[in-house]
Image 1 (tube, rainbow, N blue to C red):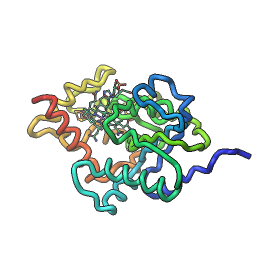
Image 2: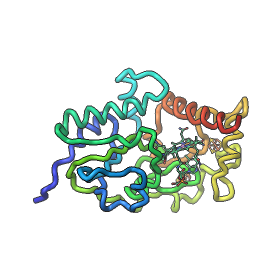
Image 3: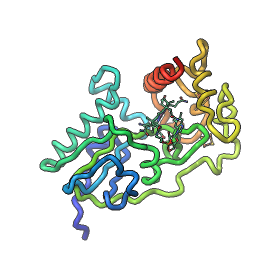
Image 4: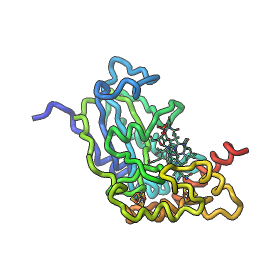
Length: 231
Ligand code: B12
Ligand code: SF4
Ligand code: SF4
């Protein structure tokens, strides 16, 4: 029998934070912990993500408005999770926050991130329809998670429809051309101002494709960041 405390995952699944991974701090490479300065009582790093549509439904139901509704909702959900399911435990939310954290690098260690021509990670089950929502350092004692393997669909995707679907040819030379993508997205009549045609063309996990409103919301945010880079 394990001595670890049970992981209260049902609450998170219900809240739309349905991808969860527990790292023991001592199993993480030192460079992942740089600048995070764990306190002696902190023993684990918990990575929370979402896959599919439920998170956005929860955000809408929660009625959060403002510039960062998904981040705000994720922070509140983590607060509620600790208050209701893990009373007495101490934690720090590292992301969302000001701390720079390589989420895809962390996702790689968890077996979530698999590189793809579109740069957004793509997974056999979720396709590209997942993202990283929170990273928490805590004094918990959950059983460390085991990374899932062989979940990348790209190596066996013979026709690679994502590449041909990009009107800016940003994926064509085996390297993502962020400049070509960004310039195309900024054009007045761009077909990609509020969504990515290459991402939509990927057949993997299409049943988990976000609602149009979520796609529009997220791409409007990245477009605003790109606009700042280019002005
Ligand atoms: C800066 C950033 C951007 C910048 C540029 C990326 C860049 N090359 O600098 C911009 C604003 C363009 C961007 C856009 C998007 N992003 Co972004 N972005 C980030 C952010 C905040 C930091 C990345 C970084 O600089 N890491 C540090 C450096 C040192 O790491 P790195 O190892 O050198 O680079 C890694 C990534 O940056 C990635 N990468 C490199 N170039 C590009 C280009 C793009 C477009 C993307 C998505 C990734 C990417 O490849 C490396 C693999 O590990 C991460 C969140 C995070 N904190 O990690 C999200 C993140 C990578 N973005 C994400 C997403 C979803 C998007 C968008 C699809 C959002 C949207 N719906 O509009 C768009 C892409 C659409 C498009 N074609 O424009 C997700 C990816 C989720 C996944 N499943 O993998 C992340 C992880 C955020 C999250 N909370 O989950 N993004
Ligand atoms: S279309 Fe194929 S190569 Fe492109 S992201 Fe999807 S699985 Fe990967
Ligand atoms: S947003 Fe448009 S231009 Fe950029 S990679 Fe996707 S399809 Fe290509």
